[in-house]
Length: 180
Image (cartoon, rainbow, N blue to C red; front, side, top):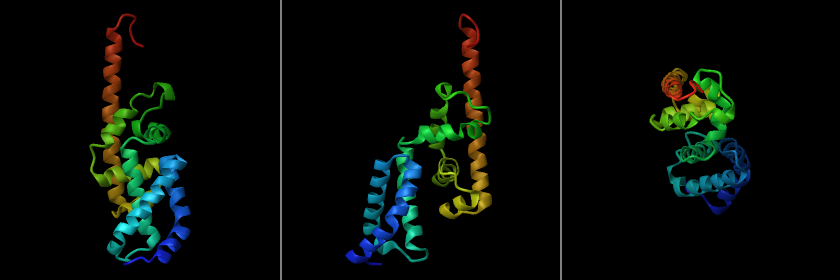
């Protein structure tokens, strides 16, 4: 598919606002979202020949923008804020106050140890609040596979965090004055 200047302008006029909302939801920052929309259209221009028209242009650009935003998140932007919103579900325990929730870095590091599809499933579900069906559609896998990947992540995240909390407790009991 070759895009004329007019077709590109039409795509931008029609879809940029939708993509901006999507990117702002993921990145939680207007400037970063605007950058993501611009990068999405730059990639559309570079990869227009690769568009197979098996989906709508919006679906294709939505996936491009989502992948870009996920890469930004993986690089550290916006993770702490979104993780705070879902920390109870991820850790499997009542969440402590935000000031004392220091295990978020462990969860983020753990997320980086998973394959791309699992990371996408977790981020779509917990960072973007997508349903399992929406996540399956975006990632291109079945709903049961989404459930399995999320469950695998949650199980490992809970084990990692429980072990870290236990180690912290053991360390604190060894200090003068007993447990924190």
